[in-house]
Length: 83
Picture 1 (cartoon, rainbow, N blue to C red):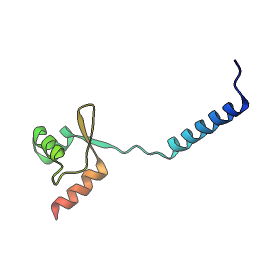
Picture 2: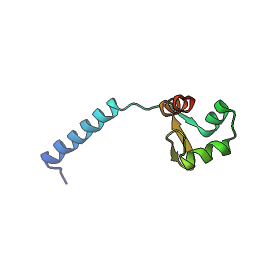
Picture 3: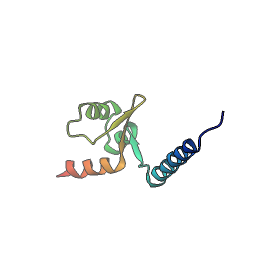
Picture 4: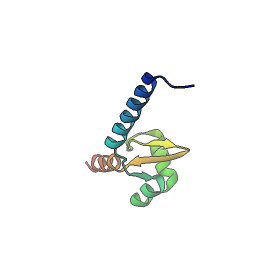
């Protein structure tokens, strides 16, 4: 079975769009719960509770049962909490 010329054009456009998105996307470094706990001198359980409750905590996300905070969000939170 041969593909129609239109199908090839559509596939090429999709690939180019994916390449454009990938080339402009930057990956931000993150901190784990353990790293935050070490920085703050707190237990990992305390940090997890803060992130879970999201009360006066940096914005976090969870991936495969592990919490992560972007470094920029952590730094913003650190400045806010010192005021």
